[in-house]
Image (cartoon, rainbow, N blue to C red; front, side, top):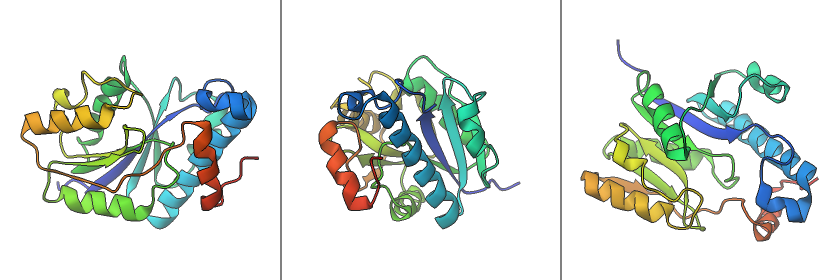
Length: 207
């Protein structure tokens, strides 16, 4: 049987107060930071389900058995999964490997890049037809998107997750694997207080 083509894997934390967007807490407070994170995820799920026809997988940590996720349980085309692994690399590798048992191509994204659009996903999947991987670099040195057709362990280990060199060490891993890959334009993600001003350009309220 031919596999369905494409799935988008969203990596998210439960939007619990004090446990998400912690670097924004000094600016917003713990409750507002958690509410903002929840709005970003709601917004992302809304456009993914309304404007694309991909299968959507929401990979959560630390639990999928929590009242906070009930609002997403019955979202059409959305499946919920629990992240598994000791660090982000292991969790991403596990999720991608699992999804690739059912799909030919997967794109992994987070919740922190409100500038990401369906056009970026369309381009990533199109490039995966003729390339081994796709990277969506972030302005802070990380990345906001990773497109894959396979999950070699070397791609997910020995990175300083959350630091400013993750995109570069991922490029090095791809090069060592002998991969052909493409990169999306540089995008910003929401991690620091100075990033909050860019939300206004997208019409996303802080309250």
